[in-house]
Every structure is written in structure tokens, then in C-alpha cells.
Image (cartoon, rainbow over all chains, first blue to last red):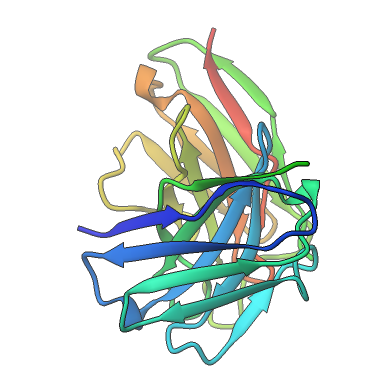
Length: 120
Length: 113
């Protein structure tokens, strides 16, 4: 069965970097695009970034473009999110999500999330 | 970006009764390939979101048939034929036609009356 496990969250000071990881299992990781989606405490869902199945394309939300980088290591079945210049607005649970779509995104499996708190 | 607007934002329901959630998009979600990339997700308290419906009306694997999706263009609806206790949570619509970015509705909280 598909399993996505995020890690790397924690408390980080404003302006500092943090890298999140998402280990995938139960399917052929290299065949699927992957997204990061976040949810601030008590708030709704916000799409953050996507990486194509082959890593050829990446896209970002305006709120993180230029600060965050999505990447994948298919040899390790792992998705990453490098987050730089963090602010309090980045405080959220970050979900790793599989995309099984061919044209439009089909977000079929979600991890349990990892909490990032940006605070001094 | 496409704005997704859900109503109501809070929906008190009686167990065993039907429930309906509306989602409207700021642009038509019909794509040139003939598909409409409108999804519904359920988030139970303390859990990750779970996909319920994709492409307007297709139930995801394992989703009970009391859940149904309908609509076209800019107007969409999620219906629960008879609400059960396990259905309590927040429901989100999401569009994937005009992306990136993927955009979500604000969420509708389903609660027991």
C-alpha cells in the first residue's frame, strides 16, 4: 500500500532554513509527480509546490517562489522541500502528496504531515 | 488564480439526514480535453485530508456510495445521502484545471446538530 512519511519539521527561527523530507513506499516513486501542500494552524489547505514525475518541471506558489525548492531523489524514494528565509507565515503542517494525474493533478495519497513552527 | 468559494462554511446536520455542500469557481473548470478537474477532499479531526471525489463525480477507492459529486462549469456540489458519525470533519473542493497553482475552497465544517 502507498505510504508517505514526512519528517524534518520543528521549531525554527525566522530567517533560518529548514529541509523537509518525505519518504515514499508501496509504489514506483519515479512514476509519479509529487506536491507539497500546507495547512496553517486552524486554516485551510494551501498548495506550495509540485515536481514532475521525472523532475523535469517544478512550480511554486507565489508565496514561496524564490525561497523554497522542491526536489526528489528517486534512488532514495524521497521528496524534499528546502525552505529558506522562513517567516511566521510559513508556520504550518506540511503534507507530501502523490499526484496520479496525467493532465490535471490527481492528489490521491497524502502523508500524515510534519509541523513547522517559525518562531523566535 | 482561480478562486474557489464554498458554502456554507458550517453545516450542522442530523445523523441519518442528507447534507449538501456547494463549491463555485471563478472560471469554468472545463478543460480542453473534455475533463473537469474538480476534486473533493475530507479532513477528519486530527487527520490528513483524504480524496473523496475526482473529476466532479468519480468516487475514489474505498469511498462509500453515500457520497456523490455533481456539477459542471463553475458550479459543483458534494452530497452525502445519509450522514454518519464518521463523516464529521471539514470538506474542501479543489480545482486542477487552471494550474499551477492548484487552488482550494475555504472548507466546509460538517458537524452534528
